[in-house]
Image (tube, rainbow, N blue to C red; front, side):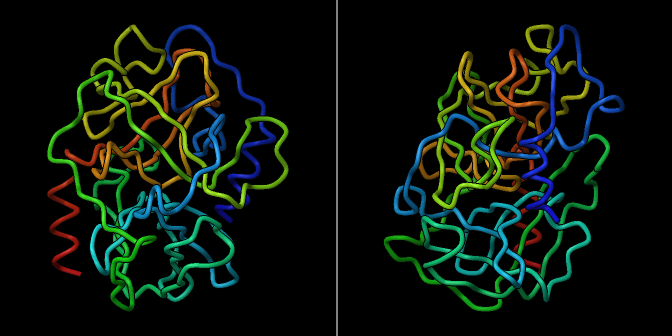
Length: 262
């Protein structure tokens, strides 16, 4: 279903407009994570990236491997999912083949997650077996502080490559560089979101470039540090409407606690 939603995003028509954007009057399809204007990359360049998949092998979200049996993703990727029907592909540039596919034994998402405001959009998966590091599978560190505005980060994923005319998702992992925008700046008059940006979020923006979000749940990274989790955004690459991510530094305590208790 999530894969269908991502595909529908490609076909939806969205318009960026002056002023702020309200959650109530926005098309929810426009809030799915994807990458637009990216370039092909390899899993070896981003070995922490994983694909969350159905039993049949359909990709529905991204995620980040943080230790031998824990994947961090977005809460909205996990709501309503049955553990027995979620699998994780690791160590492959292609989401539909290669690498290793591992079952999931437990999943959880933040109890304060709100599908209306998208606050606290973070969850974790505990893998059914431990995965050791290789050249194509590596753990990523969790940010301890939010990078300052202007810091260049990289978002990766297998989401839609364009906003309008794409009919299929890319099989090859995509990457795009974007600049961090702290939540207060993102919520200011400088951008169009206004009061719907909260302190559990961080934004990223690249002017005059078709750069939007990576697949929902996927990584926003600075080097080998996970700074954001792809959460939402309106339209794609629209003027003054950055991609919005869950802020890992803010949510770090929950991630660590959930990792230890599951």
